[in-house]
Image (cartoon, helix red, strand yellow):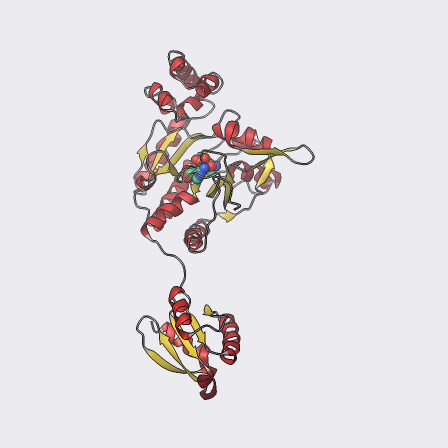
Length: 419
Ligand code: HAM
């Protein structure tokens, strides 16, 4: 039997309703705060991600689905959305019209990581990006949005971990401090880190290999090396978070897995996922727009791991599927034909109506109505057609009320409104 590709998954009916519920909440929140939807392609030139995310990152080195198209051009299934959104911002010259743009996008990303619970090769993200705003207030707005979204979905242990990664002004001195710290411990590092450490020592701080973590436990932290501007920026972020009553954890070790970050960075971990995996991550990327060919423009954003969020929300609320509003149990071909017409008319009037398309027994049809969790059942046979009246059964109370078949829409509306 043909099966799906390892690390990929189907999102089945029943589960999809949960995903829609989360998506609805996210869309409502973004609308309230002026974030507009943008949809960018799944495929982009490989160079966009290699340059944007950074050649030395795990994502670019090991995890991208990259291939030559038929003309030999190297293209990549997007491993994240930020680089693509920035590309679109530059390409459509938003910076020339109104540099301040707030976007969101929801969709699949692809990374060839080792699959495990909560880690997939096709996964989904909810992204928000604010471009053109240098002030720390927007960092706080984004963290607030993220925390609110999780609260509205009743994820209650969503404490953001925050850090500042500085800027090109404070990095060189920190880099020197880090390089000299690493110099005494090179032997303890994994081969990836040994290779990357001279070119990009910050990556060593992000390595998940236990030996590297241990060796780097006492490493200098960039937050102790911030330039005055970065320190002031971060102080405002912290102060405003406190003013908003958003509890956070200052995590000096937080570095993130993508190279574009500057200044404020954050992640949200929840107990439901275990220590290693974050449900969301983000931060500032003030150099990215320029790096990708645009004018110097600041940016900040986040991505929520949709799959992980859905797993957490599902723990609290199991069933999001919508019950049918009416099941028409039709007995005999004439009643079947009428039921079919009613189903169409009621569907047009906005009711979700189900029927049995084959001529099964009443018992079998009632079983199906139960399975669909139908709120009402209308039982119709030749008799009912003749008298023009049938019984509408409330499946919760088992009460039956006679209804005139030519007044089905009104009666059903009233009946459903009453319970
Ligand atoms: P990221 O930390 O690589 O950041 O991913 C964000 C979130 O996506 C993670 O916290 C996690 O929940 C989810 N995620 C990542 N990889 C997987 C996977 N293999 N399976 C399931 N979920 C996964 C970014 O992607 C940045 N673009 C976020 C950002 C936006 N920064 C600024 N703007």
